[in-house]
Length: 117
Image 1 (tube, rainbow, N blue to C red):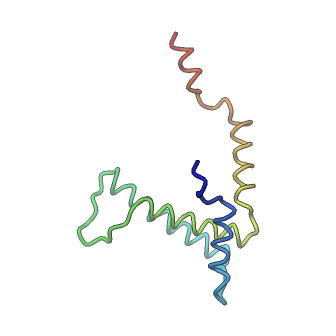
Image 2 (tube, rainbow, N blue to C red; image 1 turned 45 degrees about the vertical axis):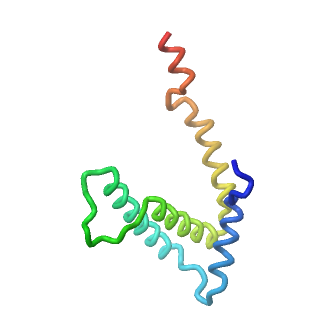
Image 3 (cartoon, helix red, strand yellow; image 1 turned 90 degrees about the horizontal axis):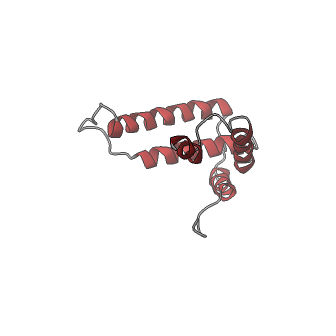
């Protein structure tokens, strides 16, 4: 990984510094959940345009999957910050779950090679 890449903690701090400059502060968790759902819909629409059967209308604004994922990351970071959730800790918790409970759920690449012999 490149040295100048942002950590999740740094992204949470950057978002908090941005939001903290406004009197309104963070939206309520329910409002942010609605916004997150809206952004997920926008991502789904872009995925459908690029990889699905629904071409974009000529009148539609040009957006990218990258932009939509960025919007989701921003709103998710706002939600986490407002609820005092450390996203790095949340990530570690979910990875622990996948590495224990779900460790045998899928066929590992090295296992599939052994099975072919």
